[in-house]
Image (cartoon, rainbow, N blue to C red):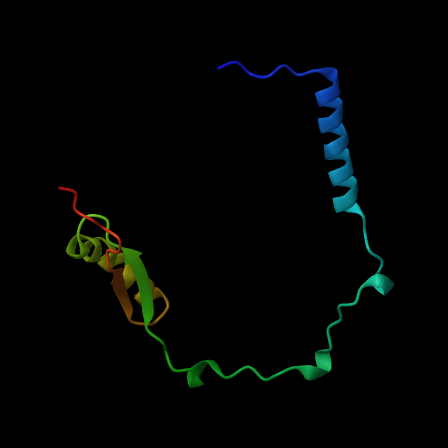
Length: 103
């Protein structure tokens, strides 16, 4: 398959397109034009670290060959991440959906 020829016209059109997109993306808005503002008087207190109950860490994966093999493959990762984040790591295997046997 041969590549299409680049004519001076197509090169010019591509260059102008890149230039127009660059200028449109680089246009800066002044602070007075912005309708977004942050009100720091509406802050909420963050709970203490000790008062948060640890949640289990769930890793969801799809079984490629077999659910048992997938659990074996990801169990060590789940344990490592659970230990790292001081949580209980578990692997959830998604059921195989839409798999049909031909024949």
